[in-house]
Amino acid sequence: MKHCHDGELNKKDIDVKNTSIVYNLCFWIGERSSYIYLPGEPLSVVELTYDGQYRLYSEDCSREDEYVLKLIKALGVNEDQSDLYVRGLGDPLLGSFLNTYRGLRLRSTDLWWALITGTCQQNTSFKQGWTFLHRIVKLYGKIVDLDGKRRILRPPKPREVLKDIDKLIHAGVGYRAKTIKNIAEFIVREEIEDSELERKDPRDIERTLTTIKGVGPYTARLAMTLALRRYELPPIDRWLRKIASAVYEVDESIVEDYWVKKWNKWSGLASIYVTIALDAEYLQKALERVRNRDILPRISKKPSPLNMQAFCLEPSIALLP
DNA sequence: TGCCAGGCGGGGT
DNA sequence: ACCCCGCATGGC
View 1 (tube, helix red, strand yellow):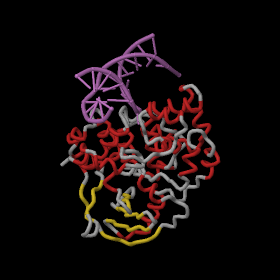
View 2 (cartoon, rainbow, N blue to C red):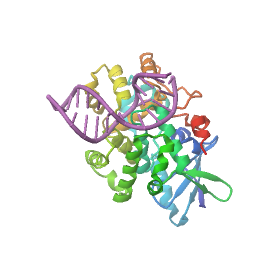
View 3 (cartoon, rainbow, N blue to C red):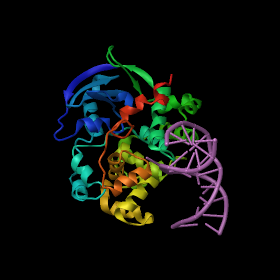
View 4 (cartoon, chains in turn brown, cyan, red):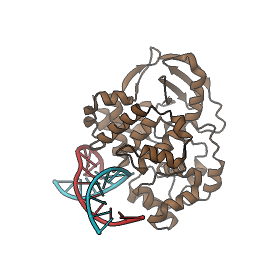
């Protein structure tokens, strides 16, 4: 890769550090900066220091202005969240989180990676799911040379996974391997531009993504949230359903309706924020924290959405070849 | 050591 | 529109 140029985010009141580290993989989180792969082609990556300086690398620097726009979009710098705050300040679940993390945005990935991320969360714990993802990157990822000085991992593309699909077994993903294969084939076959899906009606997006076998409403909605910045349809799993039911004192069967009435076009983002606010703790611990109104991230040594660095210390990841 | 978990699809009613 | 089961794996 070539070093294209350096710049500075016009970041206004964005919390650059937390935005770049939350749900990032540990390979790309450093002491003073993080790496962010930009969606789409050509392969481009940004090193973003926590004070907002960035350094752009790409296979092809000729369209570097486009990449800066991609970066701005991926970081959600211009996403106007004022309505979210009108809805959320004072909320028993997210009120104090929103107050404390005002500058946080959700960094986008590409659709392929968002769908894989959702698949890895299916019927498993936070820790196990994110362990799968780290292992997929270690098993399939290539080392890229940034400017002759630094080398970093990059996530695999769908074709690279398809080429050696049997290796997925070593990532420990179990029966999810089939779904990952289906997703890779879908992405290769459809050649959908993320921007094309982005404009569709949310129900259409959900319908399109759930045609992939193994992708249901949860994974489709998570992907819309993580890749398209479309938050109208919330990913609600058993964990969030029980938490929301407890906090708002509504029956589990109507949690989704209640959630969408409350958060409206921010529903998906609010779902993700709850996982951050509760450090993605196991359900019983999360419920206890909710009862104690202890709903702010507590950064410990354990892996959590705001402490993804900890995954690099896990033997099951660190010791992979 | 066995459970069994931040889903899903298929097969029932 | 529901309910129920099996599913691979690795944490607890």
